[in-house]
Image 1 (cartoon, rainbow, N blue to C red):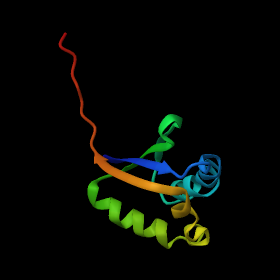
Image 2: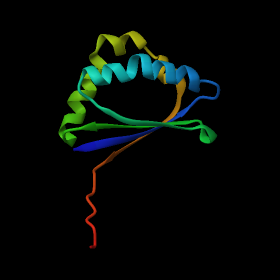
Image 3: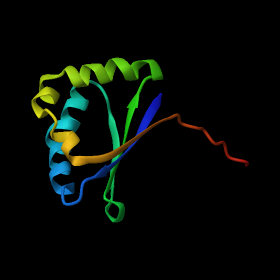
Image 4: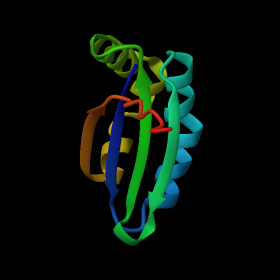
Length: 102
C-alpha cells in the first residue's frame, strides 16, 4: 500500500466552503472509486487542509486519478476546488513497520 499525504493551503475565508465541498462531493467520489480517504485534518493557523488517501500500489495512482477527474461528479465541480486552493503539496508515502526491541 502507498498513500498520498496532501497538504492544501486554502484561500483566506474559504475553509468552511472547502470543507463542505470536500465532505459533500470530493470524499464521496473517492469512496465510490475505491480511493480511501484515510484521515483529514485542518491546521487553522496556517489555513491548511491536510489529508491522506491510499492506493494498493504506486501504479494504481494514475488510473484512479484519471477515473476521479473523468467522473461526472468531479466534472460538475468545474474549477470550484481550484478557486479554494492557493497551494497544493502532494507527497507519496509508504508505511514503515517498526518492530519492538523487546
